[in-house]
Amino acid sequence: MISAVDIVIVASAFGMDAVRADGHLKWAQASKRAGAAGFEVRRELFADEADAAAPRLRALGEATVGLGMWAVYSTPASLYASDGRLDAAALRLALDEAAALGARVVKLQLGGFAGEAHGAAIAAQMDSSHVRLVVENGQLAEGGSLAQFTGLFDALARDGRAGLLGMTFDIGNWAWRGVAPLDAARLLAPHVEYIHCKTTVGEGARRFPAAPEADDDRFIAVLDSLPRDVPRGIEFPFDASRLEADAAHYVEWLAAASTEPVVKATPATPATPRSHA
Image (cartoon, helix red, strand yellow):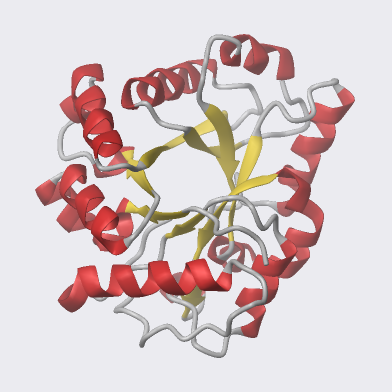
């Protein structure tokens, strides 16, 4: 038996419109009541750009700590521009905003990584930061390619920068790229420091994130193939008619599914699909 891992609720699980309308703090409070250890703040869900200003981020962060929780700060910005260059300005902004929030982890999209990691430039910015940097596999070809992620970590190792940053492994997002999550997990597990938990329903342009089915052994197999001591984030949408009950149910289920021995998933009927990355 391993120790319980931290379960994080991603703000968008409560519904993007609800978060924009009510603000993140309301849903951090709901996450606490549901039993989550952490809460993921999503920059794209701020109702106003002023919400990303340092005083408001600091207030949200202090309130989150006051709840006894820790924060992830997620931004849709990419670490690498489309031409492969490091987007140093985007990284600096993300680090500064995450620091104001008091986040433990800051998450960016990978973007257009093309072989050169620019490790020294990233390290220079990270030297003054107390936030852990991770990049996430996205749904688009740019920033969602398995080869990009294996290439990134290989490049960092060649440069003597292994461990400079980690990965958010989004189980569901691989479906948009036609990659089996288990195959990706076997290659990337050593670099995974945070897991976004969701599956998908539908195909092509009509594919949506969803909660795992009760008999989804493939999902559990992916969890088993990833580090068992890293936080798991619930990123699938909760049922809008029973948000808090759904949140509590899935926190309990995911905590059980993340420990040994593996507990068979028994989630409720998946919620109505909502599109979010």
